[in-house]
Length: 162
Image 1: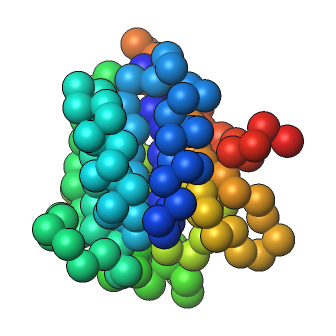
Image 2: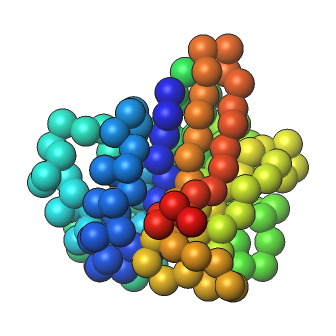
């Protein structure tokens, strides 16, 4: 199972489309917010591709879901934008919520800075921003692979492949 994770596209549809086109073997795309119109446009082009969207702090449309739990290959994934979990200050609240939801992975956006590590026993990823990176990072997205034995690998990729 190959999962693409993006966040904070902020009306840069081209970057979002590039990520999906460069990963034709992906099984799922998760967008962690602040790119509602980009997500809707991508859904129009790929109506049968599995996608998940959670609401970001800059989204004002019809997506009201602030977090979601997805199960893939027996692994539970907590997906949120991050602003309601104080991710700019600590990851403790996020990982506690993920643990409460019985999740193995916690995904968040909001900071525009990529992060990928194990925190408090939970795999944690912020894919950074696909459009407006901060902290000296580049436009990026995340990749999660889960094998049939529930082994998890996660990493961050530069959208432009550099």
